[in-house]
Length: 395
Image (cartoon, rainbow, N blue to C red):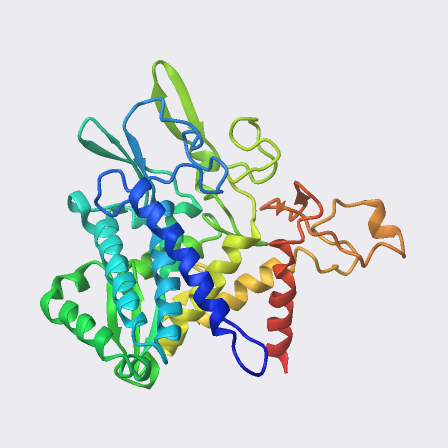
């Protein structure tokens, strides 16, 4: 996000940041795109070994892993750089070329993610994005329903025609894509234009999934038997509690199973578990993405929330529903208990401490109990803007 206090924005700072990010972006493109096809294999990306293999080490199978999250992160990177370039191009036309560069990178990544080798990382049968193991010339999907497959949702951006009209160089390049590559619309949302009050009049939508694929992903996201827990979005689908993903390697059985609390493996998590619990950073990014989708689609896109409930919400209301579930982690119930603390926790009974809530690293997906570091005031402090937004809705 680009924000500034009231007064004169610090454009020099934004330019400095842009130049540093450009160097970092170039490193990723040159070092982590193994086949030069805009599908990335980034290794250890912060989702601590959410998959079947230890991402911090070479694959025991050989070959390489084409990552749905690594590839989507790069598209997200492109959309963020595109937004900054738009801002800087207002007053400095040289940045129009950079805007065109990142738009083209975005389109190339989205095209590869959706159609490389026929299907990209999308599975039409399941309606989900999966990592692929590329081995001996074959691409094998690893059918693990994790938040990795939802990260493509984060890459959405809404562009305003009024801004584009001020950038003739970018508009010329954009129009070339729209006129000469109509096939792009088959697998991604390539600057779809709103045509009415309900679908973002004067706005254009850029996103990795098409509207149909978006709806299919949201059915998983909002399914309480899959990702939607009472306390937010799980990092691994509850489906894998009864249906663990298994992979046989040299007579050894590797397994990914839903673990809503602490990890049962020092190798795959230890004190940090991404195979089920609630993590604030990705929940928050999903909320922001849903709001951007709503900015464009408005009331023209309503989805069942929760899935199979018969209750249909627009995507802003869906974002608020996730906010409410995250807020439940910290709010006291009628008996004064807070889900983030274990029942009977001495802090709940101490008048000096019971309202001083700890910012746990992650949370048990079924009970809400706080886990990991209890002082994770970086990302878990995102509960503050979540509560502020919910409070503003009541006014």
